[in-house]
Length: 73
Image (cartoon, rainbow, N blue to C red):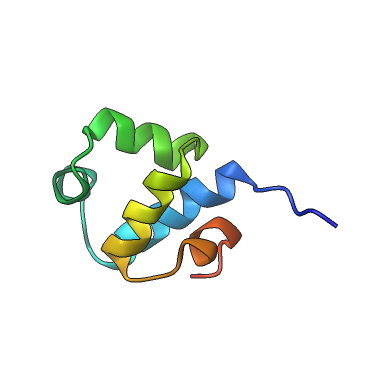
């Protein structure tokens, strides 16, 4: 059975990781090399490629699966 990815949950997970590390959107955007506009879009609707998920996973030192499944709360 296939599990669908909840893109909003992915965005909320990235936001949770950012806030839990006391980072602003500007700071995280600088760290990962994305614009603040793109980061806002990612956090709000969770639409991103697996490469972007991997970038956040490496940045926050969690697995990509944890981000995709929302397993960091």
